[in-house]
Length: 221
Image (tube, rainbow, N blue to C red):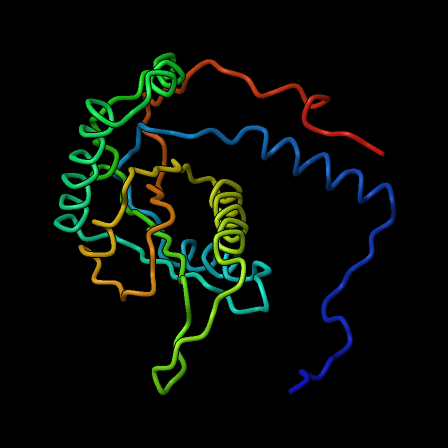
């Protein structure tokens, strides 16, 4: 069945001067984004999180199947369980599974097995990728480009949270199967990303690092 088409909704064209100003303002704002590990426990307005999640859900996806699920965790006991499980995986990673080269790359950042931010941050957003979909009758159907689609949605979510004045950390303890178990997600979902979200602590600090030279990241042909 062919889906009907409609005129492009909501498109706005801007004069070039305004386009340039908008692009420069957005670039300046996004260049201030940093991964943060020191959070305040100050509560975040629920409406802000909902709008940011709606932005994430506007992402393009393979065949428009939207293979994602977002679980917002505020319950202190659930956060405590997630922290305990994440730290157990991290201890195993650092002590047994991590290649020497990977540990050497992490060393300057000062990361370790302790993850207090998983309890201190007022909320966690756990992102799941749906490996397949289910019809109302329970029949499976394939989700195309699920990891890529969910990755794009996560990028929009991180940008949206930053632009509202919140901070995040892209946390990926491996393996992350414990998240599906704790949050009782179905078998067709795999944990993709764990995002602590909130305001920075008053004494928050981040590594004094820069970003790769722009010229090395972009080419024009």
